[in-house]
Image (cartoon, rainbow, N blue to C red; front, top):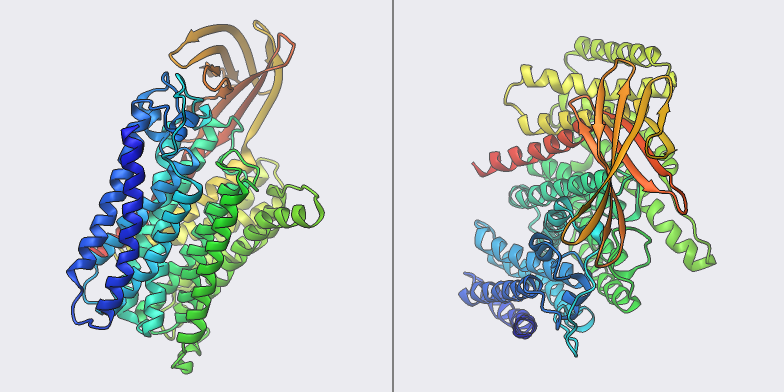
Length: 624
């Protein structure tokens, strides 16, 4: 119980320091030749108290202190130590404390690392960030206290949902939150810069590294979530357009657009309105994600809480932040040079602007698909779910010109350009179309739409690949990211087009056979672990070429809470994944068997890592 007391009072002290920082900021703002050392000291103290609070929660989980309600609801003595620690942020209260930790860490690093920027700008950034931090302190203490105690003290806890007991999901929230919370620094700094009218090329160079940090972590966080969903949920897919998956995709789309805008602003003093609006939108979407996940109005495996009071608090807090940012935008932002907006139609700025409109369209589609069912439920009490067909029909037609623009856009020069190397650009387009047509014709696929899609992705692939050899180290980070994106789209397309699936019911000893695959259900074993019992099914699967693989998918029955999960067995090669998962058929001796062959699965993960690596290279280039 001592850890809970220390953790709770650390939160109270952190809140008091946050409120006192407003006073010191006000004093320093009126006398702003140099940043007051008290501000730095108090910001560090606030971070220190939040770290102490977070460590207290971790220790409470490690020692299974069931006097703490959060530990009681989300842990158990038989749970492995790794999942006891990750259980700290695998729940509503702990995840918000992690949010607070990253918020305080980022503002401290920002103040320490920001040089050659006006003192008033740093102070105002701190003030806006402290508004968010104090809001989170109040939210935690009032509605989501991670240190509430329970009496009499139970002997055992209720345990953590077994599907959350996974290495990928253990590190997924911290990395995703670094992306989410990174957008808070961008939000605070853009409001400060707008208020002081100092948005310029030098400010763009300074804030670019924060946008890159946030973007890299958000990309990697989404990747980890996709990998977890792929092998843990037993559906055999990496993206389901699940509302909570969309909630992380929306800030990424806004942040990617913002990153391209800041590159333009760094070269020329234009697109300032875009930069401000996208900075506000990115943080708003991150906060909206928190609201949707925490309020319980979304039906998803990812959601944590189902408490209207918490949802209402975040909604009111979010409304205040949006209202404040809109006021600042309209009152302080003035476009001084209207002439700068007259772009030449063939220039790098124009291509980035066109791609921005595409990205905003994709963002709008995802936003409508996620939010519309909620509004419909509120207005008419009708429950609907918006699935993949909605997104595919609205996104795929616009993905084709988007990919073509991504391929041609980087060839333009700033201000005014002529399209050079027309011969190789046209040649690559013809080669891409012929190659896509031949591949699809050979596999008897829907030729028309798939040929156009694959050829546009191949076109981006070939042009970025050529740039590695021709341009060498020029724009290397952009080339890596765009090449990774072309590889991602190609991998997803081939994965969708050429994937195969067999779903059948089998008893032990039975065989399923079709023209391409033979599945033999050989035997069943049992295994007893510390916190679950497992039924292991042994399969032998062979194909037309006589190649045989052995698989052992599991059914696990966890002891606390008592939940059954299906654990897939996956054989991964460079070219494809072979994926098998089993389920019990109720009141029968049969097992439901789902066997899938998923081409280019590994390349989906590698391409996202490559996209992130492009961001890392850009960050390191600027640092050096």
